[in-house]
Image 1 (cartoon, helix red, strand yellow):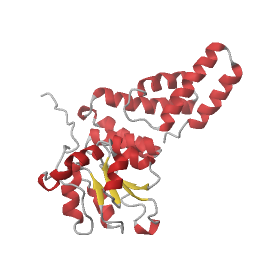
Image 2 (cartoon, helix red, strand yellow):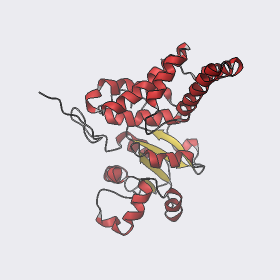
Image 3 (cartoon, helix red, strand yellow):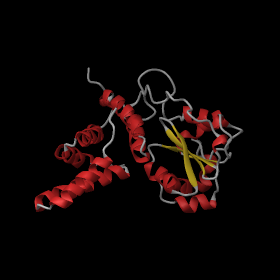
Image 4 (cartoon, helix red, strand yellow):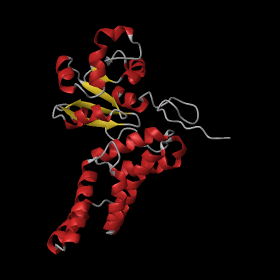
Length: 264
């Protein structure tokens, strides 16, 4: 029988709650003392409302009618098209942003008004920058990435981990995504695996192999600052080598060594 692909975060192998619901993220919020007004995405709202009311107030849930008066504004915010305007008009205290919304979570990461305090398989949790560390638990659910059940979710998490520089988590979840390859678009997985190949080559000082790997990786839609820097340096190194510029070649080699990563 042909194996069907599972390409939705609400789908998984085995019984349990699908990743459309931010389960461990909601547990983290329940164990925290954070501001109650939530920014959240449409898909996650019903679970957050069920799990966290009345301590937290959701921005939206999967019912349309209570929110139809401002749904267009919500949609513009959720797709990252109006972050500053929406957050100024509708102040919130805490944000639970799905990891499949990079166009939105990048705004929170870049904002000086917000700080990342937790992320799980489904969502990232942001709090206002002035929140103190004693308002939320640390080292919460350390095993939350150990047994993922959806390849697409694993790659969304992989992308986020790369952007924030959590490479230990990135490699852990990529290993799991590779084992769930049947669930994932082939090109997307190939591009992700090319990053691992590229960093392995960098760690060995094999910059020609790294250049080939990062030439594949560059087609990814979500990239971190390190990957962009490595790609540029590899191109500059190749140009210096072709021009016979030994000093520049040595400089780029040194810079690439600084950007290599431990792979275990």
